[in-house]
Image 1 (tube, rainbow, N blue to C red):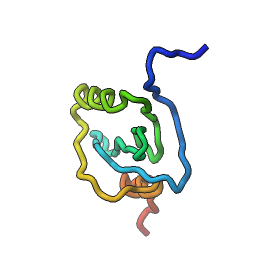
Image 2: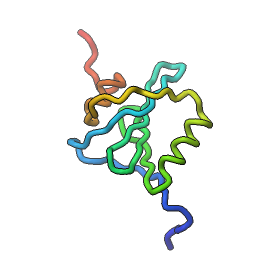
Image 3: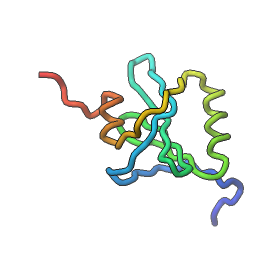
Image 4: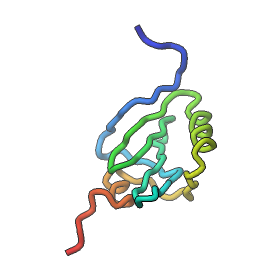
Length: 102
């Protein structure tokens, strides 16, 4: 039986490697790890953390839920809009999956 209470879902999702994402917000933890809230340009917002997409927010009230999250957790900082990144680009930007210097 499906839950029809809300049109917004959070679900794991791994799009194709050629998908691109625009970074909208970022945060850096006390340990130095970086996370991003990114959008795919088609009504989905993702949490990118630890080198991969962790959550997917979808549905008509995604923007409202995103604003609520940002209000509840003010550690997120807005990021100026630039060209979108692939998953590999997000990994490089966050420092995850980069080769160690020799």
